[in-house]
Figure 1: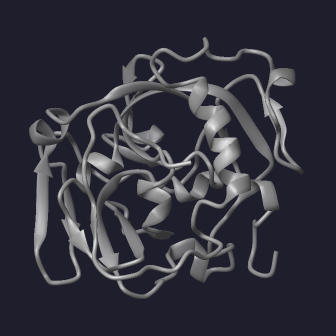
Figure 2: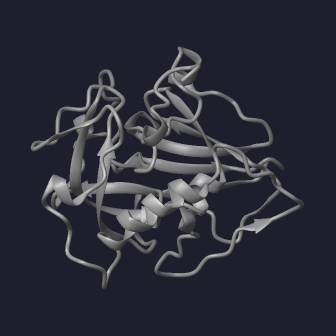
Figure 3: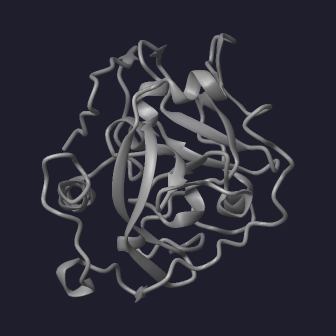
Length: 235
């Protein structure tokens, strides 16, 4: 399944690209499709019973959204926040907060799965699709490194940001994200373990090679599929 955002954008892929374990496979796409039905405008109402939802192996539901410890938050506000997209040819695109908020956004309900074992059901966010940040970009790359204001990074296949639902979130449960929640804006990649949803996001770099991020270099799995329990290297 390819996810189509509310406003269609075009990512120009130059040359052939290879599908690997990081790309949206049939099994992962099916789960993403079921999740999308609960959060796409016009779809069913958000689910509120854990028994209505598939749960990845080794996970348990929690009723309250746990704290998300990720170290001390960086001192960044909306006034000095910016998101920079760096392309392989040296070109960049940059959005300050006003330009970012002028992009299309939507309210979504997503299930999130933490590598420590808890899962939260139908968490409510307002967010802009990563797809909108990549409109009209021409690239032959297959990978992305995501950066945060805290100096952390994470790596993802590009297909996981354009063929699967992924967002830059700026609101949760009707309030703007606080610094402790990863604000002003954080990445949301709900089909992967939550560490891939980098807080305090500051930009992305399109890369030819897969470049492991901060946690991946410290032993976490390079991809992090909760349905395959890819918590650590070797899983």
